[in-house]
Every structure is written in structure tokens, then in C-alpha cells.
Image (cartoon, rainbow, N blue to C red; front, side, top):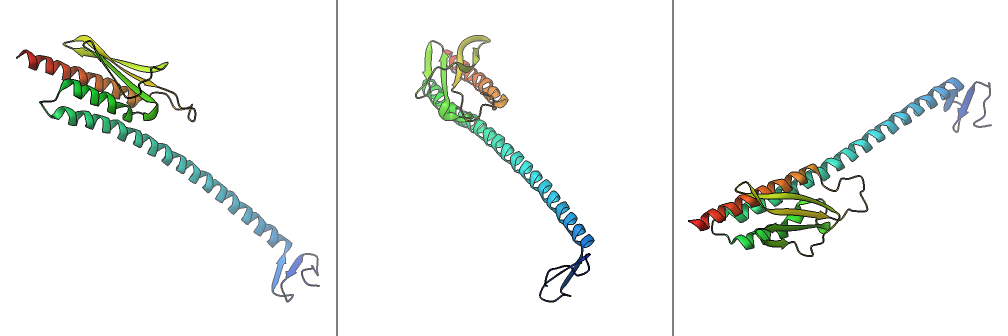
Length: 188
């Protein structure tokens, strides 16, 4: 019969007895080799998965840096015009600033300076916020507050990234410098 062993140690397959004559040891070796290849493929798959996750994480991080830089470029573009209206400039900064954070749609900005308050559209005060002092002539003349609502889908990501905190501090320093410059300009 086809496919049966005639001598106990050899398996014969195919249409003719001589087509595929394999010993038990050869079959075991082939299975071991196939098993080793499967293990190597599984390890390679794990490595690819790790690389994919690392690439995804890095892409997300770089996307966040781009948003932060966009905010800084926007503010720099706004103050490039020496004849800017201070109130309008502050409104524009406050409205644009949420775009520089992880979840712009869940980020709100409030700026209080020299007795005036500016808030981003739909401002919401939340329990999670970062404050930065606004200094003019080395005195606190205002406060920049960034409020966020934590996302439910990514609890392992901090509410404020280190770079976002640096963004808040940088913007508060720039606002202080802008206001101080305008105050000095108006005196002369």
C-alpha cells in the first residue's frame, strides 16, 4: 500500500515507492529544523512588533514637538510686527496656545495680566492645570494657566509632558517681555 512503511524504519510517499523514501530519523530532523525555523520566525515577529511600537512612540513624540514648535513660531510671527496691538496679540496667543498640547481639544488657556484676563474659546477651569508667572521688570504682573481634561484612552501618558511645561514657561517669559517692551515703548 502506498504511504505505509515496508521495513519499519522508512516511510514511502508518492505515487511510486521510490518517490519519497524518508527514514524516521530524517523526518524527526526535518521536524526539528522546521520547529527551529518557527521559533526564529516568532522571535523575528516579536522584534518587528517591538520596532513597530518604538517607531509609533517616536512618531507620536515627534508629532508633539512639531505642535510645540508651531506654537512658538506662531507667537514669533505675531510679535515680528513692531506695531502690534498688545490686547489683540495676547488674545491670539491665548486662542492658539492649546494647539501646542497633546490634546488640544481638551486644553484651555487663561492669561491674567495687568488687570485683564484673556481666555481661549470655550475655556474650562479643571482640576488639572499648570501655572506660570508672568514677570515684567522682575515683578509678577500676571499668570498663564493651562487647564487640561485628562483623556480616558491613555492613562499612562502624563497630563503635561516635560516639553509642554517648557512651552508654558517659555511663552510666559515671552509674554512678560512683550508686555514690558510695550510698557517701555508707551513711556517714550
